[in-house]
Length: 318
Image 1 (cartoon, one colour):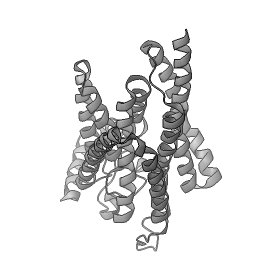
Image 2 (image 1 turned 90 degrees about the vertical axis):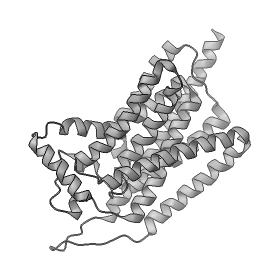
Image 3 (image 1 turned 90 degrees about the horizontal axis):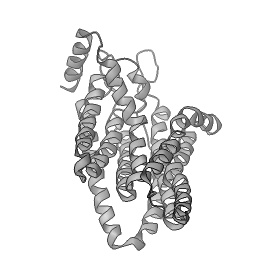
Image 4 (image 1 turned 120 degrees about the vertical axis):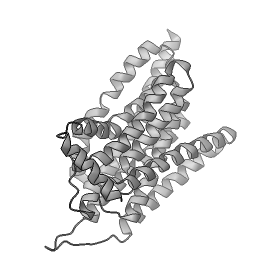
């Protein structure tokens, strides 16, 4: 049934001459490359707690996802059925196993967290609706492009909802027991280390085609897992530093703050394109992606907040 559904989408794509393919590809790319910038901006400029809620939900989601992906080891649709032909260059972003959809588990908590935050204010309720619609559009785009089954995106949505729920519970717990946060961060870091050991040492399917070529290289499939573990580890390190030694709050001058935050966001765009390949070349695809993810998260969770804290002190003295 899932393959039949993708074939229906494929026939529809062909019937309209791939007219929607560029848009659907843009939706998919935006979900994993640019949506996080909105959450970071909210964290820096609007409300620290609301931004952290969105980002922590995201980290929970992308922490859970590689465990499921690299345990289930479900092949992509075009490997399971040769009739499936992904649209455009969608295969380029389909870099791991199929189940669940990583694009959905990225867009879900980020857009979902932003939707929850913007729903609180009557002036931004419209944005909240747009964020929810974007989650659904991301799910549809992955089916439309032929890189994920309905099960992949639906389970991805469930993981996103679970992450948002667990993060809300965690924040409520830490409101009552703020002294527990450091210990939870340390435990989280240890769990990440164990997670890396698990995805590295566990057995993977080694299936070959008729020509004797490996259908899916497990080493390639592990790359995103290392990157996702690095994101969580980077957040844990940066949050520990920010909480204990920085303690920033968004600047009071919102116009000035918004301009500064946009400027600080700009380096995040080329970092993935230019800096990550340098680390991958130096340390290999696994550890290079892990180290990049740690640095990337530290930049927006701790480094820029430290700069904003310094600017805030000068603002108060002026």
